[in-house]
Each structure stands twice: as structure tokens, then as C-alpha cells.
Image 1 (spheres, rainbow, N blue to C red):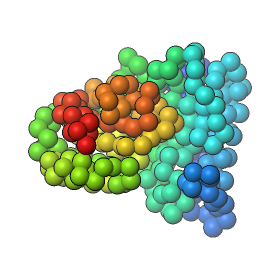
Image 2: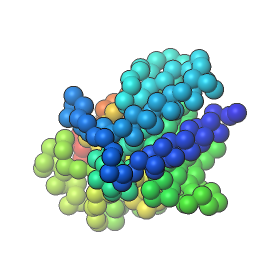
Image 3: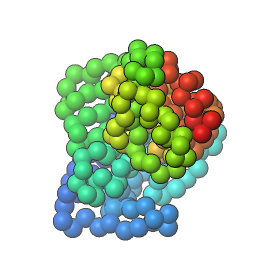
Image 4: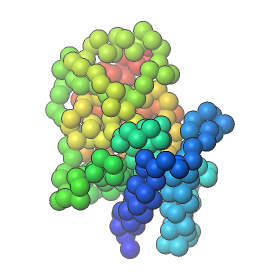
Length: 253
């Protein structure tokens, strides 16, 4: 089984578990030490994916939001069982399972599966960036050709972590801004629906699966210093044409 086929299988497993617990009255939600919520669905998904990977890739490293691990040299699977847990526990359908394979610290493939939206995105290095809706035929992702900030559409998750004036200046400079949030902002950049998606605070598992999908769609995803996203704790995703100008504004802020 190829790595991409395995990642798609993992996404199918995650979808079945997460959808079976979605909007259920007995969903158990607790608070982690960092004050973020975790549901029994988050934990069940990650346990199932770890078990499947242990069977099919026993020599690979596993890194997950709920049960830890560290990415080092060699092959590492990086999992966010439910990105958007706050949405998930409130019944908002914008959440997804993020699955990535990194080799020597570089994301080689990513699958982003959002079953409540009926959508999935995936990419493998050198093979393009793709999406499907409700299990339909794959459609290739391609970022937009917007080259002027005044014409750009910006999506974000929330205001937390921003220097306020920097945020206001960026929002004033673009055509429109909307808080689509979490993984979806970045996937819409890959699709060409949105042009810019800045995030002031992200973890490895929040980003790893997104990077190949964006970059294979000819977009860019870096940290705010312009270094590879997985080396930092923040991210800027763009269509590439606007990247340097937005980075300059973020650095100035």
C-alpha cells in the first residue's frame, strides 16, 4: 500500500468515528491544561489511527495532538484527530482530521478530511493538489492569480495573538476579510477562493497536512519570518503572489 493510499484509509477511519460522535448528546468534553477542549471523539480518532499505523508502518514515528510524540529524522506521521474541536463540540460543521507524512522534517503528503462538509483535500509531492466533494471525482487545486493586496480576500481564525494595529492595517489593506477559520482558510487558498490566510499561533499538527496541499497548488506556506512553516509556530498561507508583501506587513507589526 502506498503512503497516500494509507493516508486516505486513515482519513476514512477517522471520518467514521468522528461522524458517529458528531452532535451526540453523550459526547464527553473535557479541558486540557492549555484550556483548550478535547472530546472523546478526538481521543478515539487518534487511538484508531495510531493502531492502524502501528499495523501498517510499525517503524515510522507517530506524532499526535492528543497522545504526543516528537518529529525527528526519518519518517513521521503527524495527526490532528479533529482540527476545530470547538466547532465540533458545538455542532458547527467546520472541522477536519489532518494527516501528514513528514520525512526528515519536511511534509511529503497531506490529507485533510472534513466529513461534515462533505469535502476532502490531499496532495503528495510532485503529484499535484486535489479535492473532492461528497466522494465525487477529484478536482485539481490551483491558487488564485490575484496580485494586488487591494483585490485580495483574507481569511483568519480569530483575533487572538495579533498585535492589534498590525491586524487592523492588514484588514484595511485587503478587499475583504472573513473568519472562515482553522484548516478551511488554508484549503480555500489552495482552491483559489481566498488569497491570504495568516495564523499567529499554530502547532505542528495544525500545519503539517496543509503544507503539501497548499504548495502543490502553487501556493506558499511559511512562518512569519519566511522560513518553512513546520520550523515555526505561526503561518502565512498565500497564493504566492502576495506573500512577500504580507510578510513585510506582519514583520512590521
